Image 1: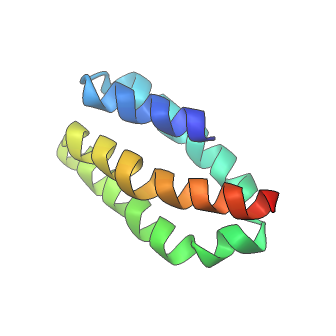
Image 2: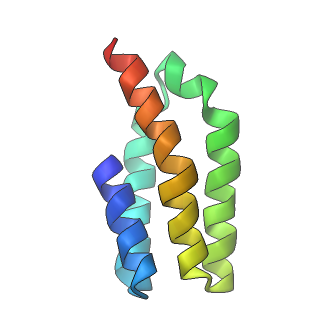
Image 3: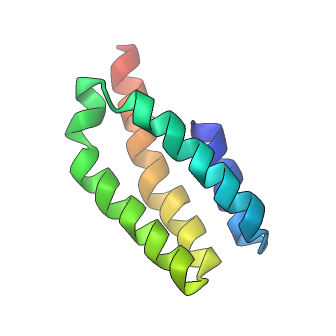
Length: 87
């Protein structure tokens, strides 16, 4: 899931919006399965807000903005959830 997020952010950053969108959809599919864990659910309000920001940036054609939100807002939440689940 994290690899797909990074792939999407990198693709958006270089203007490859089609491949970025595909990676984003794959990341969201993986995220759907991961959010059943209680730790992930505690981050859901923030995660939902940031993902809405990604979709908003994407609809405006702001690929750098979408990449920034993925890398600097969503990724830290997913990293912290993954670390807490492994403990």
